[in-house]
Length: 159
Image (cartoon, rainbow, N blue to C red):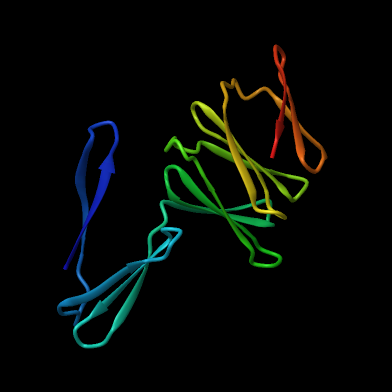
């Protein structure tokens, strides 16, 4: 029997959210997380290994990408055409509220206080302080520079 807990940042405490019973599973002898946090492998005394998908949310984006939220602050972006994966993660631990892909290459993620920029071809990522009302427009005319135009602000960021 496994007890599943979730950390509530609003309560600053762990809460039990579920109990999982696995038939014919005895003593757990090993446990390992996939480095990106998306899967859990559990080995038992009888030699069985069970894999658990540990994502918070998963959905397809424009039929070309799959977004897998492995935590509130990390999203795995998978390109469906070739299977490549990039982990978009807030280094400050902020919840990623929205992710968009521009020109099938450039990632723009938004948190409450930062903007995450990424390049799927080079796997380069950056995070900058950012306040938004979601009205800005992004331009990726040069592969190493992103330009954002806002009604009151014009910003250039290097990715």
